[in-house]
Length: 293
Image (cartoon, rainbow, N blue to C red; front, side, top):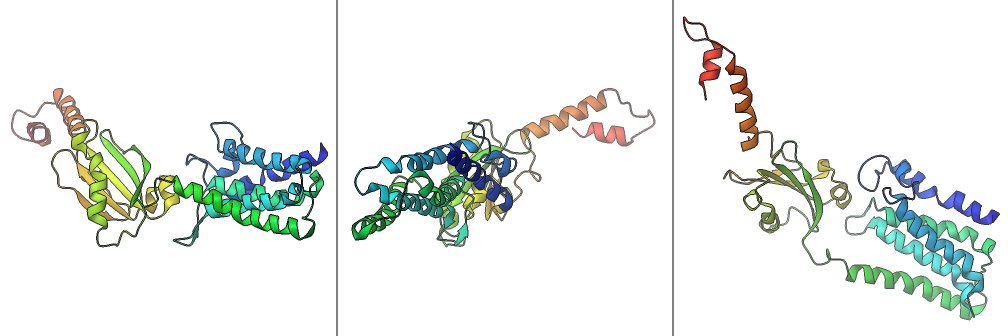
């Protein structure tokens, strides 16, 4: 029991501490990952760590009971878990670290478990046969898992990946987040992106009047809906205003008045004018403002 408690005390907070030190946000983009990853309930990111932690713990406590040469393969299996985690954490195309909690959980759990293999009855491979099997397991298992992930990833071969939406600053405003799986400077990017964004055009949705589509090359920023990381912005309008592109995080809203905003403004003016009276002798600000309908 003591070794299990020690394993838990070390492995459970480790990814939360690392993510907090790196400044990561919670799974759903709010709060610090340090707190979010420590809470093992469905409304917090720790629920995903509970899954990886449970799997690695099962490997640790059960390895002594594996048949044949299997007890000598525990370290290789745990190394394979770490390799998969490292692959999920790193964007090899753009050569940068990704804010991927599942990858972090697998990497830290797999590496820290290496320290506890012996404590839970595991051992190093014995003889050439077991060493060979361990090396094969350490190489083949990650390859199989990574291959399966890629084969079932709908983003593979697609130019764009949808990353979600949220309401804009005013009623009738909508923001969409899209990951560009290629450079936004490519010659055919804008044409392809406009076709991809057309499904959100306000003329197809009576609830939207102004739409901003942020295109990202930074996958993590898109998934966190951090519009500051947008590479390009495409703006579309319901009232017939021509759509247009802006570099980076564009402003599709402040310079365009929606029907709802116009009604609110008109209603406010009529309410203000209802009790206002202009001087009998002539025009002033009240008559000018209230007369311009």
